[in-house]
Length: 300
Image 1 (cartoon, rainbow, N blue to C red):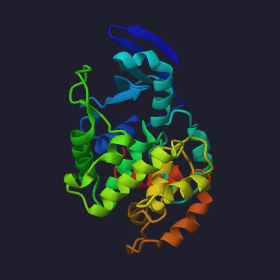
Image 2 (image 1 turned 120 degrees about the horizontal axis):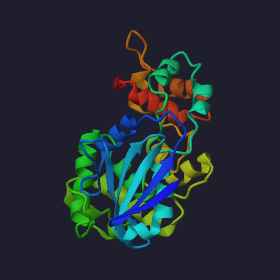
Image 3 (image 1 turned 90 degrees about the horizontal axis):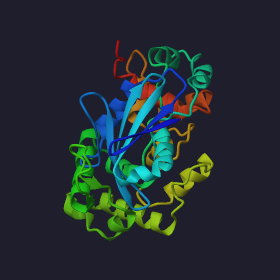
Image 4 (image 1 turned 180 degrees about the horizontal axis):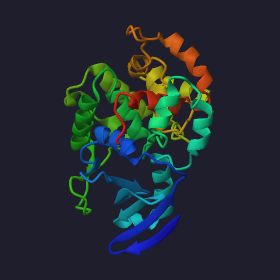
């Protein structure tokens, strides 16, 4: 990791083991970016608001040769080591693609997908609570609809910020305490979903370590599923992205089953998918990403 100061902030170069599929991860984040909090610009750079120990700032991430360039603006630049560690998790910089290739490359279906996107990573999240809120909002609705709803939540309950020099970024994502006390039905979502968000916020306030890294996968899933409104799919999705669990696998995901449909259009059942995925351990989360991305042609 190399660091240098620039006017108004700091720049850090975060290395990775190549190859790295920047277009795939930035595209994934772009389609799910929460309005007011994060965005991907026309050049493919990722921007977001951050809050570290009560100190706000803005970050911009873009690719360079063999590294990602992290630019930090505002008072939060004083916390650059913590920010760099989080960014490394968001962009999955610690993984060695060769290990994934060794496990998944021999699979007759996954092998060609890995060959097409050898540098695909699992996109992470800045904050576990934020990601879990976004996952619940996305239950049984499209990515576009969930993103729009997340933007409404931020506009209504997020904390406005003074201009930090990144166009379109205006708010800090609301904290668990704010969500727990809010009347979320004003956003026009189903009452059951509003209750699930409130239950999640209350659970985080009662257990601040709910999204702690390093938990065994099975116990992490059990803790998440104990929150009313979080089922198996949501728990595994949170584990994949927020808890950095490489073997998390949302078995009942319709996109995974659609990607593995046979020539006659028959999709595997959740039980069949789970059985097939046994051969993909301990990298099932990466298998899931390749299957999701298989419907999007890789760039030339």
